[in-house]
Length: 173
Image 1 (cartoon, rainbow, N blue to C red):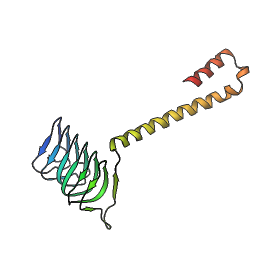
Image 2 (cartoon, rainbow, N blue to C red):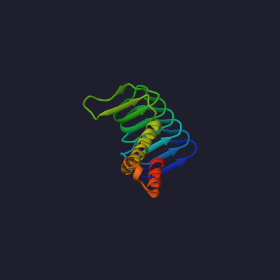
Image 3 (cartoon, rainbow, N blue to C red):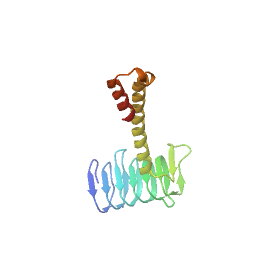
Image 4 (cartoon, rainbow, N blue to C red):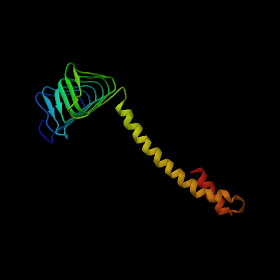
């Protein structure tokens, strides 16, 4: 699959060859007989399992397991299940695997940093980050309402009907 191509299917996708900086999306499984050379643009996203020989500078996502054979290098990996490289190597990049990692070699002392996160749900993590943003917006709104209501609360007895109504609106929005 050549650079900048997009392949999408609700079912499984089988690629007999290599994937360059293309976008591959499957509702079920993706099987790549060759490698994925993403040049930091290539993206493979499987609803279930993703199987490949090797990947370099790619973005890999699977709802379940990722099965590799040789190497994953300098890639961003999100895996809802097990990242299974058998005896293969994982070098560089960010790796998130909810169900654990099995590999021969993980990282390199003289190479690119390899950041690994195991046991967390990547989808849940994204949801929490999104909800934290929403929470901050709500806190900002609440702070502004509290600041607007503070002078009115200090002088409740001297408020006219319109000011009392505004205070009630601020307190119950």
